[in-house]
Length: 410
Image (tube, rainbow, N blue to C red; front, side, top):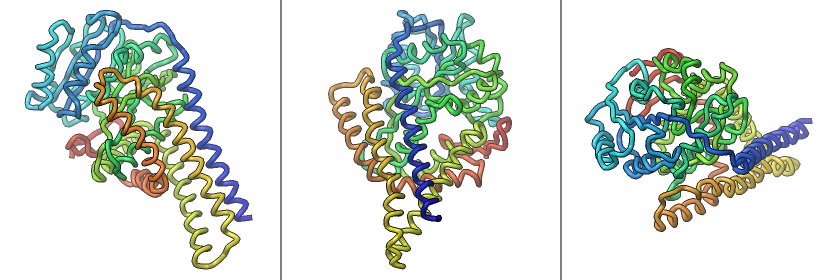
């Protein structure tokens, strides 16, 4: 009876993994085949900056060169920093002076300990948007890729049932590193939820919203004492009965190298922000982590029984339990080609950069396959840890998230 229950348990997990992957595959395929006419109303592009991300200046140029509405005056760019002492300030100022034809502003937001600095920058930038603005887009400085990035991000907003459109990141390590690969894999698995109408979420690195929806959802008030911009916007817009729409064309490569302390800080922040601002999604993650922990416990128990107690009748059950790893690696290979089609479209890569991308992306496949077993240990532990605390660290600042409406700098 116990053995039969274990087999059923393993089959159920494999079925769920297959369903989640196939859902994402069908979604991306449908979106890529849907060649709707580009929709480019007057847009404000808000870019909050703190410090210098990798390739910062080049990404600013990519943003300025966006092909949106056939005119540089079809969108306005507002850069926001906390102070003039921020290293980003002088670089932004230089790029703006080199491109006077672009409608852009650089504003200093100041510091407000009631909320995350990123949101303070965004709220101050919103005070400077043009009265003619119909769409608000929020981007990070390390994510602009293809020349029609903004147009692709905004176009689905023609559908009034869509509240927010979003892109997503793809962490690509440049070398073999367990922590960097764990983060990359965790992030890719999270992306599968973007194809779920129920659990899809906006990502603050690239999201767009109609100005009227932004006002109707009272996002200014939602952000007033918040530590998170994207998940808080997600839940506010979903309360209006509107959807979050993932735009596969806005999937972008992000610098993926990281140490264990950086990865632990990053995963802790992502999970706790989700816990506070999107508890339904976080709870699903906790349940999944518990199931994966249970699976790991079963595998280790069976292995112990075979090796030390010589209960060889456990061997077929252990092999069936190991089937999950086979399924996961299979879908890892399948999704590798799916994402490659999207990530290969990034504009502005030099031949050298393209070769570096191709090499790193090719290596990512076998490297990820190697660390899948390790992920079954690390990821559940990281997820379950988020049950214990509401404290995060973000760009050198420590926050305590007491509620969605109360954030304290500690």
